[in-house]
Length: 294
Image (tube, rainbow, N blue to C red; front, side, top):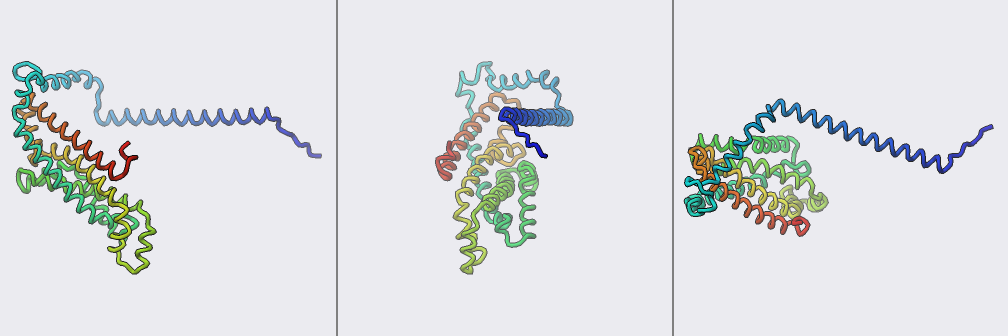
């Protein structure tokens, strides 16, 4: 004879509470284990990178004192007490800053154009052949993996000092970076319009033009504007190797210990980047709508 054992509501509640406590305990254990592993990996990475906290705190005063020097004029006064003396070379610096902006603009435009031409071959859903997709992706990876300043140095050696080296370096690096971003936008596009256009007997190029391009144009423009903002900073650094722009004047001021000039040049770069950041952010928001601006 089989006896059925019924579980009382109190017993069911106790079982549920015990299961909940076990689940919470397991979750806490996973979080604690992850934190321990992360801390251990961080310590090992710091040791490998020779990060020494004792050295950091011992020499931190040198870091602070440098900023104290660049904010002090030769007369011993603070830079903001005599703006005319501080910004004595503003005409030359603005001219070189304009050169930096032109380098960034031309390089970004060339890079965006090349990325636009190549990204359809790199996207998995639009590439005509797997071998072509593989080759284009490796090419884009190479273009964005090598640092832009390394390209700039190579082009300075090849073509001499001047903005041309900076333009070529930014163009190549932008091609790799934007090509990757553009291809990801294409891979997220709706393929139903492509099937509809292809059913009419249209060519691959027509499918890209009439089915894919209308979906991704805003994204292309947004990423290109973002890349231009990044390239302004890149062009400023490339001047360190003689690739034109205000970076050349900045590195001269640093090497010759013209401390107040360093802060003045940095101020012009920072203000310019702020303005570009706000402007491009507004434009990207206009392209994507109100939600992107919030």
